[in-house]
Length: 411
Image (cartoon, rainbow, N blue to C red; front, side, top):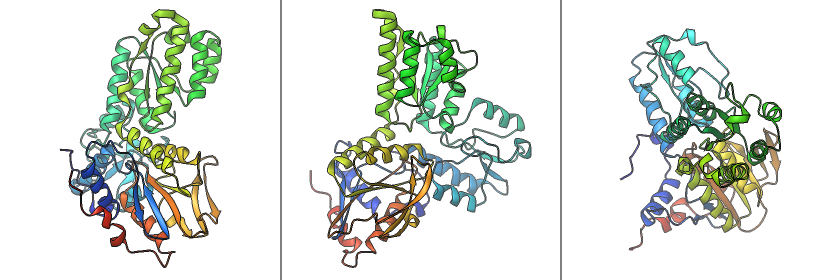
């Protein structure tokens, strides 16, 4: 039986939780990726099969609130945002937790203001070996409230293992992201490391491997994204690819295939000896959420609404998938829904909040795809649906809409 986490009740939802439990009982092996339909009459919501809090996030939330309960007068700090969701982080701040750093690593308060009596929570993304050492030297117990996701730790373990086997580690990730910085730190303790952001950058790296680009190109193009002393002449001969767990899993697989092919072109039949298989490090939740979103898109709708923090990497990739085929609005919660004719949403391309007019189609029946990132509480989707339904006087009640999800059919 899957572990049950002690997540505060105010993050739970009466609507989404009912639908999720029905689907779990009906399909415990998660083979059916078709969306769930909540039909309110004039507006219908198609919910992705998988979304919301994953194992790592629930684990992190449980530990953070336990730290508050056990503080007994001690100060409680978060190294940086525990997860990338403003609602969760704002609630923790309201309970007295202070942040030491921004998500990009800028110091909000110096470490020398900390004491050995303070509680410091390590976020779900983990942290660098250097930060752990600095906190330990102050006397802070970095393991007491360490919320690092087990799947992130799995990536670290595999990175260190292939480093021990003389492979260079290629990280598919965003070099400024906390998780990628942490993975970079752990990997470089055992191996040369380089970070690639996407397929385009991987192709540039492949050009160096094949010999089409020289070391000077590598140094300038990947500046700030490779470990100290990296030698392209020898450190690109044997590679293993791991990823920031919130990246597009399909893109990680494509990058690995591209670099593997480049090694074959460089080394011929011996290329197989130059590439480490690390496919088992991909995060199950990231895979499930992205696969469920693709199934959601295939089902079709008038528009998509994606709920999550603007700085959430895994949520942004769900937005990218939906944007390819329909109008998509990336919102933080129901407060972003100004009205049926106006919405405030995050524009991934402009990297800023924008307001759009006439976002909701003026038609008799509206179909909305609805999903969320792995750090988004289900209750936020309840509120989004409730607010949108409030604009339709003829919408049926929640109880009526939930009737199809109350009784599990006999198998």
